[in-house]
Figure (cartoon, rainbow, N blue to C red):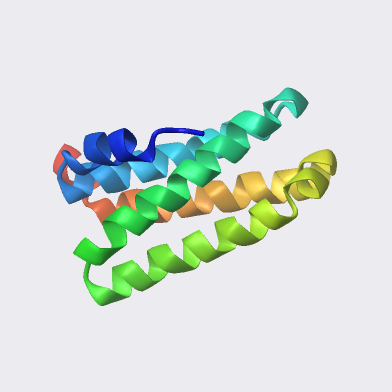
Length: 118
């Protein structure tokens, strides 16, 4: 079991935009992990961490953005309920990879970090 208190303290030190960027990076990792059978536990761990990141971040967001994050959190929880079946089925795993990529892209756009690069 991870020490969520220390993880939360580290995560919450960053500004909201950076935290959203971290969440997007996590979801991108899930997408990457999905390409290899042996990465099931790593992907599951990153998804679980992402649920916590959403829980800690959503209250600081505008209602619309918070609602979108909470919807992602709900979808992650649904995936977790069927994780072993999903991971053992290449097509379902590919669907999770694609969805994780879409979530990551949307959340990084929400963060505004990409705009700061231009």
